[in-house]
Amino acid sequence: MRDADLSDLLLDWYDRDARVMPWRVSPHDRKAGILPDPYRIWLSEVMLQQTTVAAVKDYYHRFTARWPAVTDLAAAQDADVMAEWAGLGYYARARNLLKAARAVVADHGGVFPGSRDGLLSLPGIGPYTASAVAAIAYDEPATVVDGNVERVMSRMFAVQTPLPVAKAELTTLAASLTPDQRPGDYAQAVMDLGATICTPRNPACGICPWMQACEARQQGIQAQLPRKMAKPEKPVRRGNLWLATQGQRLLLQRRPDKGLLGGMLGFPGDGWDGAGGSAPALADWQEIGEIRHTFTHFHLYLTLHAAELPVGSVVTHGHFLSGNEFSGADLPTVMRKAYDLWRDTVTR
Image (cartoon, rainbow, N blue to C red; front, side, top):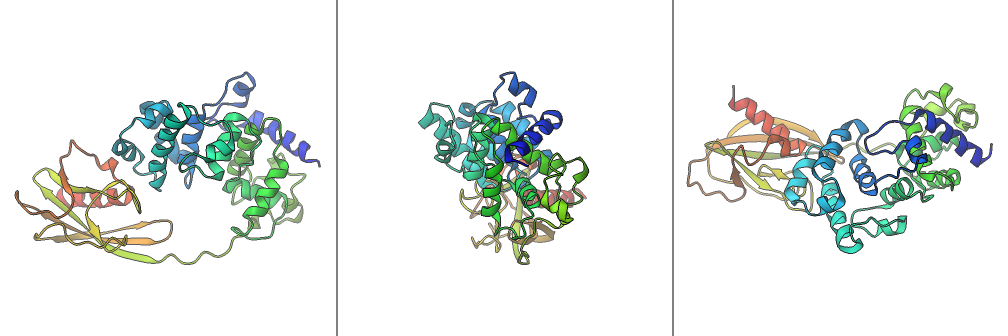
């Protein structure tokens, strides 16, 4: 079957069964001349990295309600953006959102560059995001390859090379199928195919528009692909967090922009992020429990210590905030776990 025929089959399927997502212009609306907003495509693609559509939707709605255009986001306060991002993880993405938005306003008159190469010039935008925005927003025939597309290509062509070694090969195969006509819809279609039919487990081959051409299906090995190299076991790091109160106020500190949880609010701590440190004040610290959290490259076990500090106590790092100056929802997930455990302890 010719590559053009495969593209047509997939686009016909997409026209019927495209997923409805808040940032997406449907194929029907696209044909009617309604164009995607590059800002919203870019925002959704950054949010979707390392997570799922279901996890992102509420964040996307809040962001676009508060900052409906790239000029609004560029003018936002860093702390406000970091607070809205809390819970999505990979916090460097939020910092890069601000950098890119400000570059679009400062260097491009508030208009996103209209090509993959131009998008790559923006801070924090890599090859995948540049290709996705160029294809979806501007209909550039850029090859968009995420985990879903890798899985589809590995099965379509029965690629036995394990990931991540196979990435370049799978990208070349994906490029061979990318059409010059409707490349934006095609990019979304192949991602939808991987998300809804060519799933990691129990792929629904019987309703796949590409079932006749799929080499893995012909060999009966579709469920075994893509092959992956064994992942090394994640190490365990241990450390401490100190939760200090002073009346109705809680001691918090803004973490450095670079590094883990960069730019986010958190509790003073030590022993887990390479920063060292010690208790933020002399006090009668009481151990109240342990929380566990998993980052991409390690598991984290943190022992929590709590104390009430008298007014006038010398505090070496952090500052006290009252309940109307921050919310537990503003904290990254690991810190919110600590906050919730502390709150449960003090309300018993």
